[in-house]
Amino acid sequence: MGKQLRQQRRGKGSAVYRNPGHRQIGCIRYPNVDAGAGKIVDLIHAPGRSGPLAKVEFGGERVFMIAAEGMMVGNEVNYETGSADLSPGNVVPLSSVPEGSFVYNVEGQPGDGGKFVRVAGASATVVSRGGKVVLLMPSGSFKSFDPRCRASLGVVAGGGQREKPFGKAGNKYHAYRSKAKANFKVKGVAMNPVNHPHGGGGHPHVGKPSTVGRNAPPGRKVGRLSPKRRK
Image (cartoon, rainbow, N blue to C red; front, side):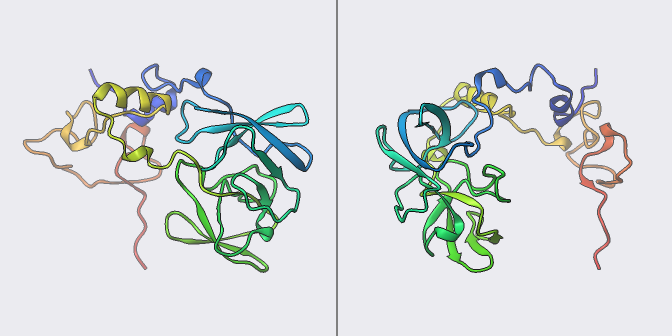
């Protein structure tokens, strides 16, 4: 019996690759609170995330923020106060961050809540400020941001977690299941023809052009999608 491709099963909502969202904490964004100081009341593990979260209390309201290295329970987090305090976790506009500082959870547009540099151990470096703020991203590329975009100071906590070996297949299964990902990868050319368009043959090879058009049916859309001629 032929099977759908894994990415199609995920999109359809297969029980095998269903996202266990009931165990996860919702979308982590900068809270909609007044500027001021909040107190860290707890540091928690969040299933489905690589780094820990900090539970911060702002005037009786408790919100979750991505934790930075050096955060401790009882510390204060300054939220858009405009102060010169560069303690880890403080949220400030990029225009207020000195060159050479590390930042994380950077907004792509002012007010979007944070889109970039959010995984454990990641940080971006402020290179220059002016009409645009230029950051050196973890990938090594330079990216420009609006000076009004907010960012958190420091480095995301939990760095080095990728260096720890899983030890056994069961640990990897549970870790990837929390992220709704498959803990294994099988090449299409290693499958049977009923399981993948690249499968079959006396030895692993695609056997046909691996480029497919934009209008190809879903079961055929694997490989290089609608490649364009080099100019």
